Length: 122
Image (tube, rainbow, N blue to C red; front, side, top):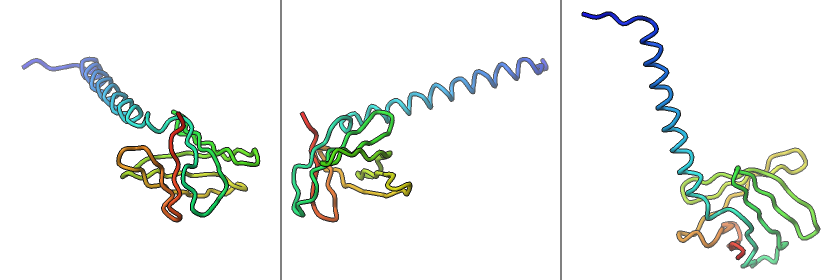
């Protein structure tokens, strides 16, 4: 029986680690590209409460910027899970959670509290 040295074990571990990293990168890339439909500008299309006509800007790196009608920008982060969009916005140094339902065809972001919804700008 041939005994393997420490160098052989280290090489094998490095190869396994390399494979794991490649697989993780592939999974991450496929998840990001699956959310390409969200990227860009979304405008308020239905506003039953006559709230401010803010614009949502989604970036590839997970950032969201809300441009308000009075010219302010509210920055935050977003994530998608189970057909819902979750925004974490920073207002007065405090986090504010805002949630939207995503329509099945990804054409609307629906604010469930009021029924208002945003649509992607062309």
